[in-house]
Length: 595
Image 1: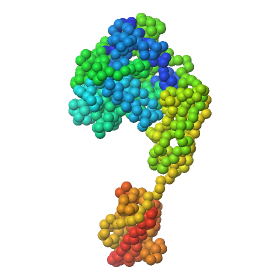
Image 2 (image 1 turned 120 degrees about the vertical axis):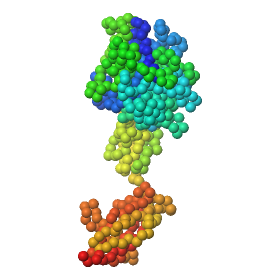
Image 3 (image 1 turned 135 degrees about the vertical axis):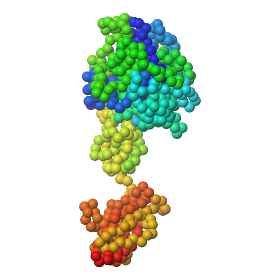
Image 4 (image 1 turned 45 degrees about the horizontal axis):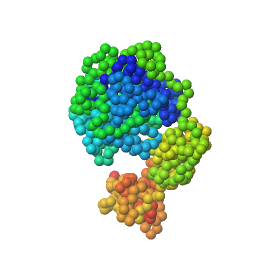
């Protein structure tokens, strides 16, 4: 969370209208990709007006403080425009709140591009990262970062010692937060150290994972939001992801307000010149600011653990608490009254009503066409070189952007999309194309189908034929014994030393080479023997041939224990590897002394 808790904009009736209209705009102007869901139960949940319960795990930032300033009002019918209201910085011409520091903006867009490649089914928009970054740290304290994207001074949340916030004892020895007693949220995206240990990413390619670096933090936050197969173009998944970041309904509403605001237009400003949230008089993100947040309760404690309207601190829910599944509502002002027009000052802050019919996907889509090859192939255990790709066009043959395309794997196969899922929904780009997530071939060879369907449209689906070829069997041209100790045993006993061999091909170590071990009568007449040393099969029965043995990653194979019957003498064990390599090993059995 932000190091110092921001103050909510409370400017009387005018700002009450800001809160109400901002949330009304959010509801009324959902982009097509966020309008409806094709994900079964989650769809029904959303249509019923229910918000998903957040994950049970500790929120990413430990549930500490955050900036609660709301964006300037943007009229729903004029994207990108603003209304000048008392107390709001700038006006419709300058829109300073829409400016994002250059390095911070670049980090968000780079994270979006990386996740579009690695997890396209998530549909992560960079504006969501910007909204969270605004609420968490005021865009890294107005872009107070160095040339590599690392914050000039630490951005630390309050001490998570259970006093007004969650109780999280130290997990990093103070390495990130400088506190060896308790954890603190760290960096532009406010990760607690224990969460960073699991989700930290190297976003700028310097080989380090630093929560204080905006590129690393943005990619880590995006990866976290995309976890568990979430599709952020689905409203229920979007809510679930944000609530997983911080279990607070007010937090959800605040992030969504900024998300909608940034989607309507933003611009780059020089690093260090971004707008600082109103509650941070000396700049967000310097040192220990905010460490005493939440210690002075306000008059109206909030239901999600806050200490009052004036500081907005909150704690994690107790284990026995039931999650709040009520529909998120916009933050209310100090005035009350009968809900009216959201844009009319002084009439209260109504809860937006969901539209009676969900907005449709972009109209005019008439068909999907294949882009590239319709036949794909890969070897078992590898990734396909190409992913299925289609293009959505309207009745005039023009590309349709923002349409949902669902890819499904059909047939008897263990091949999966990246993320080990059998289906994924992606949005078409500006040119109308939609590329499926990367296909990962399983171990099962064979042919199956990948089907692309335009969600919510009557366009005919497009099918791709995918083939998984069996792995080529590794071969060895030489087998060599490791160690040269003579193998001896007595009758009615077993060989104390295990036999280990190594497989190579042209001097290169070979893993997974099939090897067969057989007790034979002689090298000149290699018939299977019916007496002398033997192995035990899986059922404990004596056998003198073992098949389906394989070398390990180091090209080695250690045979099971070799036992002896009552026959003494010199015997021969032959090892045969796929590829023609043969090794004969002598086994000497002596008569056991009479008891």
